[in-house]
Length: 553
Image (cartoon, rainbow, N blue to C red; front, side):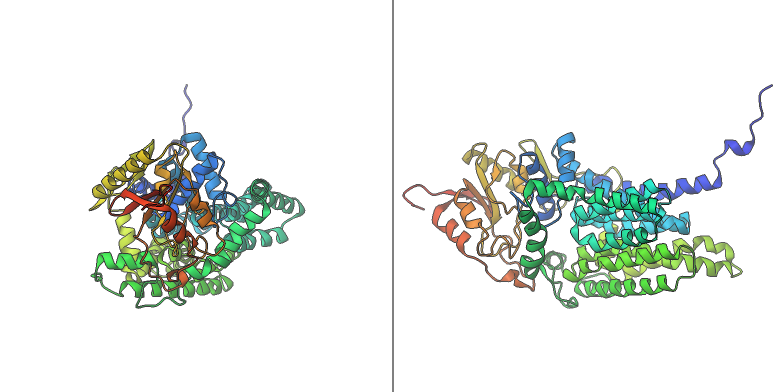
């Protein structure tokens, strides 16, 4: 006689269904815009710099030593490792970025599930809604935040000493990816270390040392001076005056260059509510206010897992300097991606308790969803352009819609995205790289930058990526004010050895309200004027090569 199997064992339990739904909903939200994200334009200076620095590592050019790099090196080393295995491409770099974002969402979900699976789902969705418009760039801040979120979850959940050790290691790696996350990482690891038993304390210490160990390897490769100058002196001392924006933000002027450009291109605001510059100001004050309120709420918390909420709120406080140094829309979103998740938790838990005491107690299960709608809805009302429109645009395409205009050259592909004018830009870039090919041989030195080298505010770093047979003529791949154009930067001497220059005047009118509008050292511009001649190019980019020995122009 065959055994009778209880009916309950053949079914997935309610708890299991809840687990599946709690993971599936955020997963669908991530996968839906994925094709669009993979094919979005890759022409920003930040992404181009990651592509060029990471691929340069494979050719022996190390960040901080051979290439100016203003971040901790974790992201570019990771991307370089992916390039060495899967090939050098924008898609591989963005898949690395996707991995870090999944780590961020996983960390938020695991942290929030202490208050229920529905709360975890809604907190994760809130984080994704804020960070998704930035795309999949393996940007150091996002990659570091992903490691920090996952590390925080494992440290706080780490009753098992191995889990705690892994969490501490991830917190250390977060610092290796973005050094400004050091205070946040310490806020997670140090209290856990002080409260731990001897065995767990040993694991936490070992894990943190292991996470920070890559710093030692990088130091051996590039030297302590280059490493300290690249990660601390350049971004904190030399660069700060040229990237700082007014505090608080001016409600009548979008200080950030690209926010101003967006205002110009889109024309007058047609969405209801505040105008675009005022939205940035409102988001700035809202983020500061929410951060303060969350610390107060955590201090007076009467629900479950008070210490966990306190840690999450304090991490939010430790992230605020990122906004204070430059209150641009992107920086507000980087920090806000963490804060909105904590807000959802702080609203959902007491709201659920309150609803359970009312006659409509069955509505208590919808408390996390109400909290999510309240948080995101409030952000959309306050910032219908910077939050509402940008987030909506990410999710407007179908999951398989990935059409994009591409430029392909020497086995490298740069997507230009979609929209009016991309075909014309692709044609222009095709003509540009064909001209450079005709003027150079493999191994020649190329420089890409602004036409006015006294104001080094931005550059088309992706062009280096399209020319893999040529060697960057300068250690300054990115153009940053106060770095490439400072006296003694060495840029002028590097240009003398260049075989071809690719210059553009697109960024000569850079208008930010800081020292970036002031001209710097004229030496590099004088070298170009004395030794290089314009030999052709396009309406956007001009190509220059060394003049002949007579100096005729």
